[in-house]
Image (cartoon, rainbow, N blue to C red; front, side):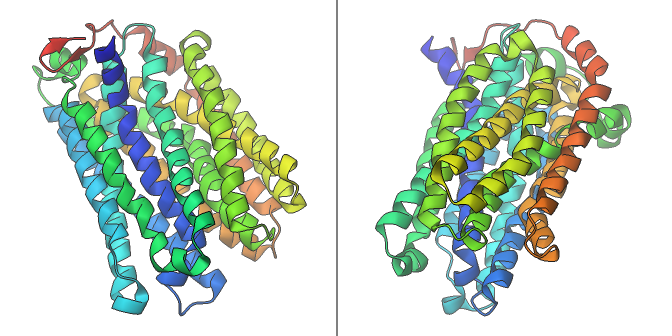
Length: 435
């Protein structure tokens, strides 16, 4: 039993670290980076510039998905999840040690952007390998649970990020936080890297890879695209509002609450953290029933909830009332968690094993980069263009939600065929011993 639990955690641990890294970066982009890396700009311009570096990490995600995807489909999923974890952790630690603009001048934001690209490369490669690893190790009729656990690892990382930043921003003075306190969350990530390596180095290669991929001819990259183009487009559209919703709730809402609704920074961090914890409890329940109700239904229902949340959240922030804000934020986080839990097995099983890491990883990360990484920046620009009208951001979320719902409807038959063709795999094992 202990071995199986360790193997089950091997997939989510990378998503946890990725969301922790991106969570603390997104939070500090909204609250700190404009001041320490772009001090010569106005507060609004500095925040937009820091959101630009936040988006830069997403530019590298598709490239990382291609690079690590080819490695995962040719040499194994385990190779990907270990190497990507090391690269991701190294980049995050380096960000925590960066000099600020006051020390290094223009070199500081340049180095920050470069490390964000490295971080994005690793995260882009990590997801496809971890998702395939988890789903392919899963027992029959438990792929929704095991794959969804990878998605649930993301919210756990976001909560850990908030729990790291919140006490620091409360205990330290604003000057202390700006001077050195913001570095601590990045340095803490070393603990997660070590834990992740211990878990993943003890896990055996995917049984599906060993049985169905390793002994067959590898597909060329152009063959992957030619044979799976429709599935890749489908994943891009399915991921439209899930990728946007994550960063709207966890990153842009912070900036809106502080800059436009006039709420205290510590209060906004507190609202977000409490909402994430409450929603994660609900997500744990969703994991247990994902295989019973079907991940496609779960994704569609969560998308509808996300569309509604896009309209409710900003109105709630404008009221300044704690109970209203917590309720709206929790509903939004439940929608986000439902989408990420349902999406992992859905994306992975649309592709054959020989193209799975590349196909699922690249198509999802393109959507993540184009729509998710730019979400805070687009939301800020829309708000500025409409004179502070949050309705424009809500309308943008609704438009993307309609796209995701259309993809759910268009791909339902294809997904049923994909899941019905998946044969049971051997029992999960740890390296060198039975689970």
